[in-house]
Each structure stands twice: as structure tokens, then as C-alpha cells.
Length: 37
Image (cartoon, rainbow, N blue to C red; front, side):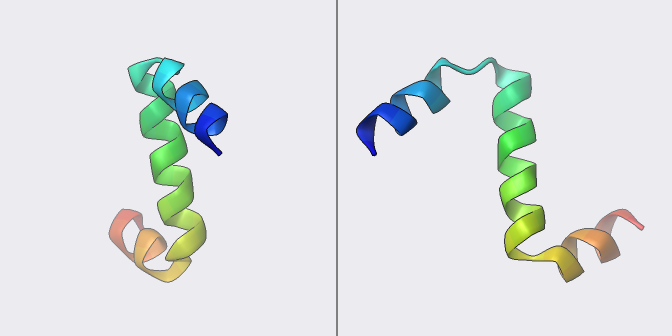
């Protein structure tokens, strides 16, 4: 688990934002689509 977090920190800012928004989209698909529709 710690290595995954370390790899996450090593990502560039753009990749980090993409991963974060993807996680949000997967956890709250309805809110994400309504916000960006």
C-alpha cells in the first residue's frame, strides 16, 4: 500500500489530477456527470 502511495506522489501534477478526477467519477458517477454535463 505504501508503494502505491509513493508512486502516486511521483506522478506529475497533471497525472495526479487525472487520477483524482477518475476516482471521483468512479465513486460518484451521477454527481460527476451532472456537474460536467
